Amino acid sequence: MRIGMFSNAYRPVISGVVRSINLYRQGLMAAGHFVGLFAPEGRNYEDAEPFIFRYPALPIPAGMDWALPVVVAPQITWLLPRLKLDIIHSHHPLIVGSEALNFSRSLGIPMVFTFHTVYHEYGAYLGFEAEIVKEMVRRMVGDYVRKADRVIVPSSYVRDLLPSYHIMVEPDILPTPIDLDRFPPRARPPLSNPDHIQLLYVGRLAREKNLGFLLRAFALAHRQDPRLHLRLVGDGPDMDRLQKLAAELDVAAVVDFAGPCPFERVPVEMGQADLFAFTSVTETQGLVVLEAMAAGLPVVLVECQSLFDCVRPGIDCVVSPRQEEAFAAALLSLARDPQRAQALARVARDRAEAFAVPALTERLLDIYHLTIAAHRGRQP
Image 1 (cartoon, rainbow, N blue to C red):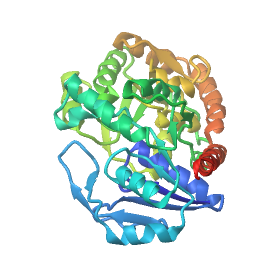
Image 2 (tube, rainbow, N blue to C red):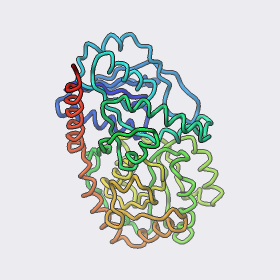
Image 3 (cartoon, helix red, strand yellow):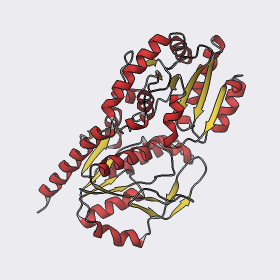
Image 4 (tube, rainbow, N blue to C red):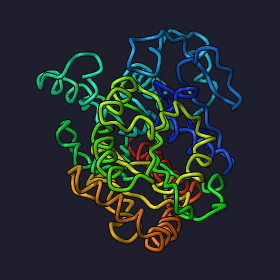
């Protein structure tokens, strides 16, 4: 099969959407399919992967870690018809995503769209938080999505959001896969050092990740057990605010802000930690939680509906109410019970295997085949 993927972001940007595209490209190409990717150029970045076709791009305001694509690229307009694509897969509803829809219609190629993000919540980055603006975003995105031949969502949580975007279709639920080969068995079991317990968070340092909550809960737990340390791996617009908060809470000496981390190093970070702490309540699927499970880490989460597609509270993770004292107590309960923590980690690793790249790639291919067949059936 010949597939064209379109995205507003790709490497060197670090995000869940980029990770999803990268892993599915790997899986599809390993299965013998052609996957061309159309995305904005990365500043001072050269692609090592084949078949990446770049649009020119402009930098945009601070707080966003990607560039603004300029979809004026005669070479891509010339190339697309010659690739003889069987299907187009759009990963964003605007800009490069609009180009995907234009090519789908002009060339008569079916298009699937993956609804990765809760788009109406991101207006805050540009200074727009009013409900009327959120509704405008919902309608604009909904208008785009209704033009796709088929819709994919990463979780049942996102599926249940679609009606608020005026989208009345039954989507396919397909989470982002995990490259299990990158998560070998741990060199040491978690919580094997009785004198030092390393908590880990991996992800963007941004307000939707609820990291102020994490720092305050950690401070409560650390007061009761000074062995606890916290490492925040990632970068984002909230870095300065969180560093100041750590100082105000008097835990700056035991909180390590590690900065950005390439995908390739995430397994190393996880292999050196004892517990994974995750407090976001706005996830669409929580890929990094599955990666922590694959790495054999005990996981402590706050209640977040979208994560319940992949985790089983009390079986492969601990889920806390959305209260800082309760989250601190959950951290302490595992930190003080290594046998329970290690048992959770073993079950979590087994659970993660259900999300391996080959298995989910097969499901994506099934969606592509169904979309192509339905498109052909509608043609005169």
